[in-house]
Length: 148
Image (tube, rainbow, N blue to C red; front, top):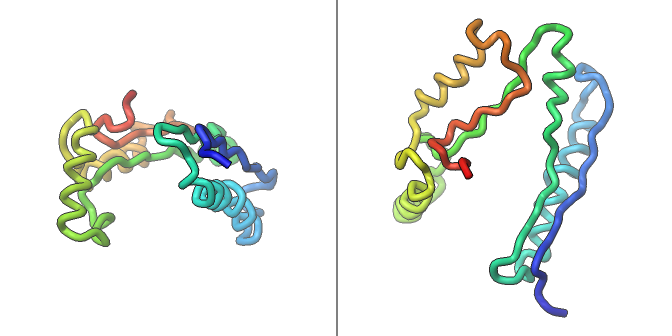
């Protein structure tokens, strides 16, 4: 059997239950299917993917928590962090960390790693009254890393 040119990971479900009824079993089931499942699906055949192959992972743009809490005027937003100067990469050796940061900085439009303080500033904005009309949104705090 030859290598695969592409792999589409499309397993997932959304449970329908009130937010206050979510328990560990409900969350474990959803996480096992929606997060753990695709990761294990990719781990198995990953080495069989052809060079320059493609992996597509089906995700959701649902803003279910924002919808579930809207009647209480609770706002829910998402922060998508890029490289931020924290201890997150502390498990890497100094050499590997330097190599990683050099490589990632080549892809960040602003050409630098973000400070934790700047990331916190966005979170604080989303908690203050100035953002009282913002919900169900995603904010990329990544120096332009994800910009196409």
